Length: 243
Image 1 (cartoon, rainbow, N blue to C red):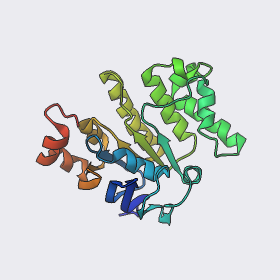
Image 2: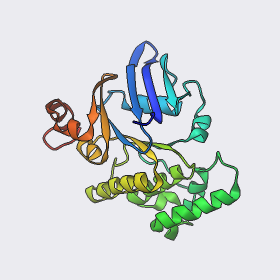
Image 3: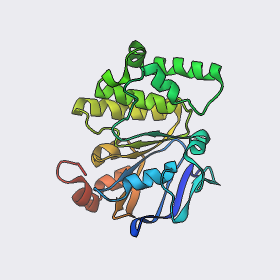
């Protein structure tokens, strides 16, 4: 088994006196898709913010390729290979598609490589190429999610953290987005850590998963094992397969 690309070990996070995460440990291997599941206020978003450097843990460590990045700033984490697709996409609505993509490369300086990657994104996402001069805020929800993916890839990441990538999308677009995640993982070799409310859908494309409850990891395993686990089905999937 290869060494983890990302590893969280014994993470404790507090918001004032309230503890949000307790002894959280997880890992993502190179090229893996890993789902992070749990109900509201379970600690999923706090875990993601800790990985991105937006929240500092009181205890524990965050490692990338074995290097401790627990105290490293967010921009330096991006340069080291971590990218984010935030909840609700959060594209820059007044900026064009091209301007949004270039914003994803803000930590890079080689203009020739950036231009080549821009062409690559347009080849990978033909719909974005057709709308390159269009304001991002006028795109459909599915198109904005494609733009968020492409913008993250412009930083040449090794790991993309995705927070609720299917939120607010129609069932048809949800399927398209999940298919796109699988394609990006396969074609770019980028690892994915995905927080997703629709747990059954997330596990359908993941290699492994973790379940958070009240700030602690309570279950972990392969996606297939978690889908078959009666405790997961009852507590997090429900009859319709939604967390």
